[in-house]
Amino acid sequence: MLVLSRKKDESIVINNDITIVVVEIRGDKVRLGVEAPKEVPVHRREVYEAIARGEPVDQASVGGSGHEPSSAQQPPEPEALAPDA
Figure 1 (spheres, helix red, strand yellow):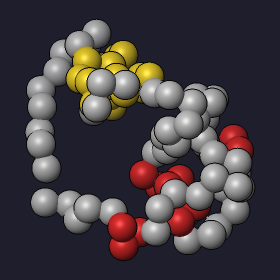
Figure 2 (cartoon, rainbow, N blue to C red; figure 1 turned 60 degrees about the vertical axis):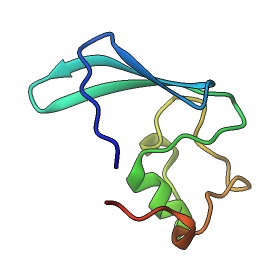
Figure 3 (cartoon, rainbow, N blue to C red; figure 1 turned 180 degrees about the horizontal axis):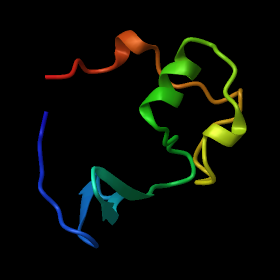
Figure 4 (cartoon, rainbow, N blue to C red; figure 1 turned 120 degrees about the vertical axis):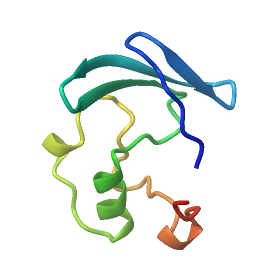
């Protein structure tokens, strides 16, 4: 796992088309902004895992990013994920 340090308003770029921005740091919570092409699904880990298990996902819990999938968009199978290092 690559570990990076960033301050508020700093960002990282992934694969030339995904940008992660540190929007806010408040106590032990960090708010991140994600800019990605519409065809790239973006999920919080717990939502991703629920979708991968085939569980229904409450639309209120997925946020308003516009990147959360419809039921037709499924993430890759969990075994296809790279293991955490």
